[in-house]
Length: 162
Image 1 (cartoon, rainbow, N blue to C red):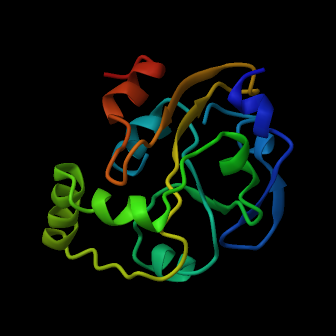
Image 2: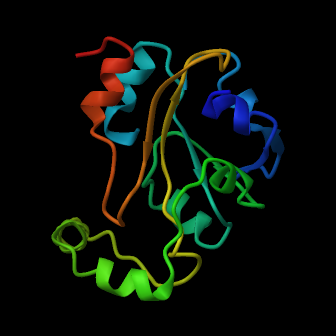
């Protein structure tokens, strides 16, 4: 069973209109990252983000930090089913001193992104690229540390986009 099948029936909440939908509905009709959204749009690929809570969603949307459709995994079921890492306080503090974390903090300050310490900042996630219909996962990347992220070139390769 692939990751898309594991979480397909889990419900998430649309961050804009509050509608509850199944995860599989997000990739049912088209293949399923903000800087590369124009290239994804050109190739009929849907960009979807799934967060863990409603706290800060309005500010996130107002700040235009994500160009795709945003959903909330209210029960954190997808995160649990995919076994996405969750830091504890004793893991979180040292992780802030990793070079990658310091670099990410510097980049966000330079971009004047702001930020706060509200909400669930212990949960990390990942990137799941799912083929239309959900029968195949093209890319699965789990964050191992706070600043870890998938290389957008790897995402574009999934769709033969240069």
